[in-house]
Image 1 (cartoon, rainbow, N blue to C red):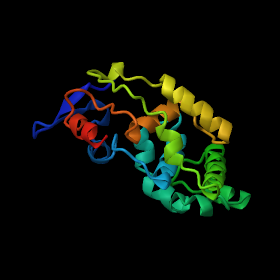
Image 2 (cartoon, rainbow, N blue to C red):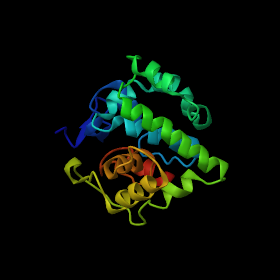
Image 3 (cartoon, rainbow, N blue to C red):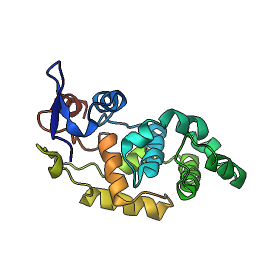
Length: 198
């Protein structure tokens, strides 16, 4: 288990889960918890969180540029047209996570997203309705949940609409990453800044 808070040589304290890896620290400092309210940004996050399932986020983060290239910048209309031959091509690309079920789920999710776009429905509105009204504050990493009542409800609604790889744990990770909750620990220098963005 990582330390709750890590303090660097500039006396900046941040959530210990990001360790000292430069990419992970940059992600923690600039992205994690920042509210994402545009549909396409949220679509990419859902796709990447689906690939994370069973893995650590750093594994995905290190490959994010390759994922964007391989999945046409997560443009749902273009991605929805991928064929079985595209799946086979992606299964040979060592730059990404070569998991057939996750690749096929991402393409299916693009098709589901395209239907929403065609109906002029908002993914942001769908997801943000599950942002809890009450804000929680955690002092230790072991206090931060992996699943909540809200993420369970989100998962249920997404699955019913045809989304794949959107279990309650994945949905909560999505909520954390996109600012629906602020799980920067009390004492992390980003907690107040992210709170202000809400």
